Image 1 (cartoon, helix red, strand yellow):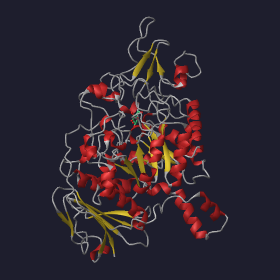
Image 2 (cartoon, helix red, strand yellow; image 1 turned 180 degrees about the vertical axis):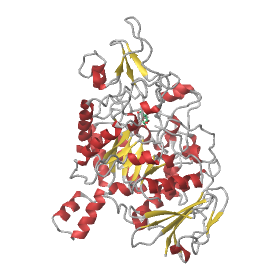
Image 3 (cartoon, protein in one colour; image 1 turned 90 degrees about the vertical axis):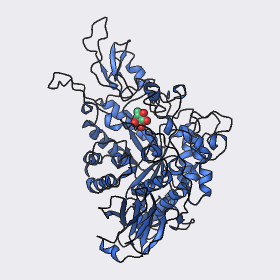
Image 4 (spheres, helix red, strand yellow; image 1 turned 120 degrees about the vertical axis):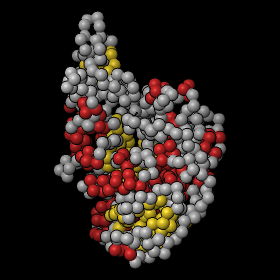
Length: 609
Ligand code: GLC
């Protein structure tokens, strides 16, 4: 997770939908999923040679490369849809909403952890890696979800938490039972400083947990400390132990064989620690992050996991197994390293958090980060995102309280009209607002309990998905008590309302995902070029696939109207006539690329005729 959470501001004005949006991209009936995998039968036919070789090769490539242009949707299962009225979302709830996700143009869903867990960190403390927490359902419900998702061309990705387990995991229970238990060295045990028979001594060093206080927890029974990067109930595994590697390979195999299409590797950069004391020039112990994060062993582990995942192919849903990394890297060159090399690949899709957390509508900052990712990752596929379950939502980080919906259209455009895979967080498509608890007694996230009132925790971005204006917003039964309260904004910000409104944010997202699949230059083959690079107000770029018409995208990053001239440096655009594919509500259709008029935070997308 990101270590510095944004201080929240109190902006929450609902922008009246003043403008009318033209959705001229493609007919509603356009076939979804041009880039999605074909059913296995087609592959079998192709292999038998019953389809032309060219088409077969193309379809095979599409399946292999499905992730390169994928729209991945993060589902926080507790909060997405409750099917049994206990106020907590579950797997059958997700299954019941698959048609919605298909209509949104989603290619894959990433489920945050649904494994059995004491839920100290809401699933990120796993006590059994091969099952489903009864709160969320059963393995049979999981198989049903995967099968139903597959029918709709949607793949399922799991969260893989390898940094730590729950303190209730049988491995840890064994490990803490005695110093000579065979599982002892699966975790990071350490003597206290200056230990004596009667005294536990001080923690081995002054490392701090991500969630506050010392990262070392004293264990009275065996009289040693164990290390926990996160909560004390999340002891860190010892990745210097080859048995830990083997155990995770078997867990990964278990889920791949069940048909999952890949994993999001949680907190991956913190897998290794180097507890050898280093004394700085002032004679003090050196405790910088470089001793607990980004250690080189992470690369070795990910090369191993990638090679392992690459050996799996499921006839029921062919295509590459994809490894996504929770990679909050310091800069683009360290992000580049997360891809590995051609000989030793690591993640296909390490998250580009550089762009995600600029946290202000600043054209030049966006341009810099987009340039960097285009130039700095050696032709690999970027995984763009703006949001997740650990950070305040976009209203807080990018909104101005007046133009929030228009700003979120701009962000959705950067996310979905750029080259690469796109990762979105549930509720972003309708503009859900961060709604933190008002009283400490209502806080659920232990981070908020520890940090209150300065740090209110992550409940505010995990509130129930807003489906309609009914009591409990369609998330659970009207009489149930949802695990987190439904925000008041659900009265107007909800799927049912936005489905009806052609100018809604939801319909903007749908238009963009449809365009990715139906306009060739907006697909994986569409190269991206930033243009009009001196413009401090409008971010513009083109997409062009070989032999296909270019697409021009212009997004106004300011609260004032702007006119962009995109005919400048790009010869192809000098005389170009444009056909509008999508524009913000009330926006104008330009005749040519030299005069694109944009409203405050307005967006224009046009195809060169
Ligand atoms: C990741 C998760 C976060 C969790 C932490 C510890 O950062 O995204 O939610 O608390 O890991 O597992």
